[in-house]
Image 1 (cartoon, rainbow, N blue to C red):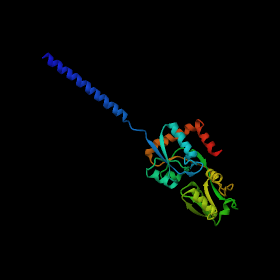
Image 2: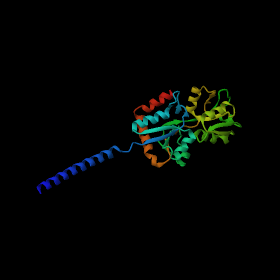
Image 3: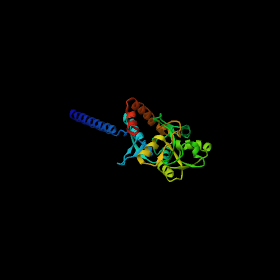
Image 4: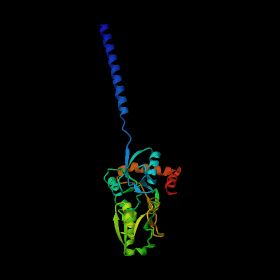
Length: 261
């Protein structure tokens, strides 16, 4: 009887050990299966130099690109930046195919009313009329009876449309900046309207036969990072926090100096 009892106790102990080992293995596997960190998809338009463009190595570079990278490093989040073009970037964020957008987007009430949710402003820019290098146009009154090129759904387009009735000119809309510039260079339009720092960089780097007349610019307005879905608020909050930090530690000024000075 004692022998039988001893065998029974031994088997019970072995079963307990085996079960404990299995439990430990399950716990380890559950721990190793922790979900990976989210990668945020950010849409942009890389024909907006010096804010976002592609360099000779086919890399995305520019003020917006560097600010986003600095903010992500400060806040510890990962992201993928995709160049979709202006209209397609907006559509992707609206449809939930991208989480956010950074593309020199001016913060304005019309966009807020239509569902854009903006970060704090990260750069103040004006819009300016731009004319051919040999053009005699020097003031708004000189545009009377002529045509002006603009880019779709931009602050520049809003600026031109707000002036056209007063000064008697017409407006033609294009989907991107290079095509808009070309319309002026070909003589189809006498002027186009673009964000001032972008236009200055494009004229210099592209050796374009265009010029910026003095006194034909708008009042300044800020650019903002944008989401269009309240469920992405975490991303916007991280952008704002990171932007504040890189302004405080000097990284923001370093980025601006890299591209604008």
